[in-house]
Structures are given as structure tokens and as C-alpha cells.
Length: 539
Image (cartoon, rainbow, N blue to C red; front, top):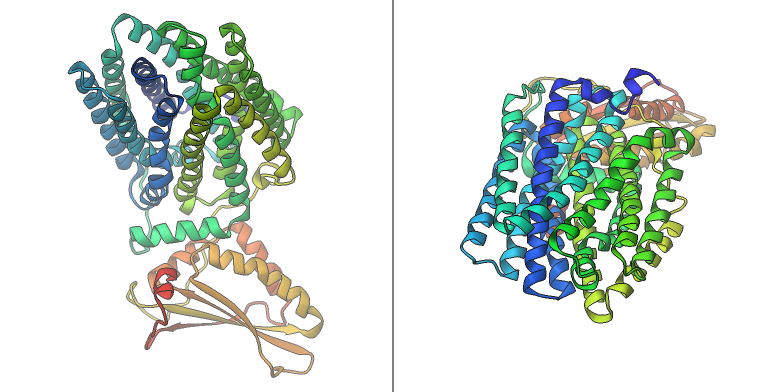
């Protein structure tokens, strides 16, 4: 194995190593707090639904805020954004410690404070994950993502065990205080990170426009949609292993706080163990096949939890489940990183985390309600069966970038500007004229399907292809492509969003024409009328 392909190659980067260690320590604090929250809730109530709602509170903000967080991370300095979100989570954890010390904790307070921490995590996560390519070379992105996941799961193994000891010896207040202190290390490391600023002569991108473009990209990117579907389905059915585990451990297995913490740590230990052998497994199995095997194994673990009543057996299942969880989610995360270009990476990750958070929050509430009504054994069994059915339904959907690498490096197209134009001038209509030999007409139309996807994905508001009823010359057909950009600045950004992969599709369409390149015109609106409110929303 070459050094660049080693599972630990990214750790040779000093800044990656420092951030990785600091993040691991912070995640330990987060899991210590999680044990404190769930233990307190278990002492207050026996309700599986209220217990599950802690998980819902922690992940629901991801449904609402991850996409805005991704848009912000793509248009501002990610380092500053990370500093702000880490400071927010420090304050939320400190507030929880104060409320606990004053004996003001209720189920509503626990759920509310987990919601506040979730807000910080939702805004932090897209910027954090999108920073991996800023820290390591492209060939080490998969290893960097895996190490991030491994570090998180080392924390998941150590944190709950430490949390159980802290709660048992010192009480939940100290667990919350320890979490607040854990954010200090991350803030110090981020403060010392000299991130290379991205220079551009383009006008600044506005937040609302960045949001729309990010959503439009996801809507028109089939590779990303496959990852969202498979990852979201896995999390929805797999979530009960975390949201219902406290009820299983505290009220069915009758464990103390230390044993409860150790049991929670089993999933992290399994994830750490699989990290050590993942490079070997990836050489033996394709990523998509490995993901299917991990999903099937996780589903079997859910079914087993429906019937097991002994802590050692449950711990063994959680070890295997943790391995499956890391395998699937690190594969999805790597797929996102490799499926989108750098200009939209944080927004794509924001969409992914939104789906992940929505599936986790919705799954926790749904399976908690099932457990409340019919018992947690039915909830575990139902989730396991649902995951197997989901696996069968998505078996043919492959994560493309994992078996067919894409060249998403930028291929800047020179905009056609006759002179200086105000970036806010618009909307801008781009018109391209193609002359196509009659025998190539059908093939050209098919080639333009992919061009349409590229234009829409990169920010076009509307796209059309017309055929001239009057042939320009005998044996030829004239096609006119047009697409609308919201303003001139957005049109310039579209030129900078083109990738080498996109150019291959464009060259395919051009090769079917009489001329090597289409004739291009740019028009700005002289007068604009809107027919409906829907038009305003779309534009």
C-alpha cells in the first residue's frame, strides 16, 4: 500500500491531525453529556417516546438548518463559521450545567437544551465536513472522511463509558460541565488554522441565491440523489438502535449508569474496530457491495435486539451494529465528497445532513411512538424488517462516484462580455445556435438532455431547446438552446462552475454539429412581466 493510499496518510498533515484530535476530545464531551441527558430522563420518566425525543431534539435542527449552514459555508470563510458554531455549543452546554446545578431540569428542559446543541451541530457540520478537502490532497479524501468518522466513533466508544463513570460518581451536572470545557480545545486549534483564502474576481454570492442554487443542484444531480435516498433510508430504520437503547438498557436490562455508559460505548467500539479493516475490505469488495453487506448486517442486529434480554448479548450486537453504521455512513459521506465540485460541496453536504437529520429525527419520533404503543421489541423488529425491504428496493441504485471516479476539477469558461456590466443586471438570457446534419438530429437531442441537466444544476432558472422550422441549409437542422440566469453575476458564476466532466458532455453535443462551437448571444431584460407568484418563487 502506498503512503498516499494508507488509511492514516491524512494524519501526516499537522493541521488535520490537530483538528482531528481536538474534534475527538470535543466529541467525547458530547457523548458524556448525552449519557447525562438520557440518564436524567430515565430517572424522571419511563416513557420510550420522551426518551426518543431527546434524539429528535438533537437531530431535528439538521432538517431545518443544515442546508442554510451549507450555503453559508460556501460563501463565507469556513474557519470563522466553525469558530462561531463551536462557541455557540460551548455556551449551550454551559447553560445546561447551570440549570442542572440549580435543579431546574425537566423533560422539556432536556429536550429543549438538546435542541439548542443540535442547532450548533447542524450549522457546524456542513462546514466541518466540507473542510476535509482543504486539509488533505484529493487522493486522501476518502481516508480523511474515514478518519473523521473513526475519530467520532472512538469518541462514541470512550465518551459513553466516561459519561457513565462521571454520572455515577459526580452526577449529571459535571457531565454537562465537562462537555462545555471540551469545546475549548477545538476553538484554540481553529484559531491557529491559517486557512488559505479562496480568491476570485466574481461578485459576492448572496445567501438567498446560494440557497436556491444549492437546492437546484441537488434537484438535478442524480448521483447525489442516490446517496440521499440510500443514506436517508438507512438512518430512518437504523436510528432506533440509538433512540430506544436507553429504554432497553435502563428499564428492560435494569443497568446502572456505568454499565449503561459502557453499553452505549459498544457501538463506537465496533465502529473503531471496522475502521482498522475497512481498507482491506474495500480492496475485496466494491464500495456498493460493502455498503449492502453492512446494511444487511445492521438489519439483522435490529431484529436480534427485539428478542435479547441479556446485556453481554446486546453489547455484542451493538459492536456489530456500530461497524455497520460507520461503513454505511462513511461510504455515503465519501460519495457526496466525490460526487460534487468544490463550489457547491458544503451545500451538497448540507442537503445530505438535512436528509440525515430529518430521517434521524423522524425515525426517533416514529419508532419511539411504536415502542410506546406496542413495546420496544416491536419497534426494533419493525425497523429491522423495514431496513431489509429498503435494501431490496434500492439494490440497483449504485453510488456512481465510488466505482466510476468523476473529474470534477474546474474548467473555467470565458464569459462573453462586450464590456463592463453591473453584476446585478438581469435576468440574462443566453441563446446558443447549433447547426446539425439531418442524420445527427436524434443523437443531438439525446446529447442535449445531459446539457440541460448541467445548465439547470449549475444555476439556470429555465432551460429550453427549440428546432427551427426552416432549415438553414439543405440537409441541416437548426436548434436553438436558451437558458435564463437570474443576473449577470450569477451567469459569470455559472462559467466558473463548469467541470472537466461537464466539458466532456458538451464536447459530445458539439461534435454532432456542423460547426465546432455554437453561436452565442447574451440578452438582458429590457422589460419584464411576471404572470404569477410561482414565477417569483422559481426565479
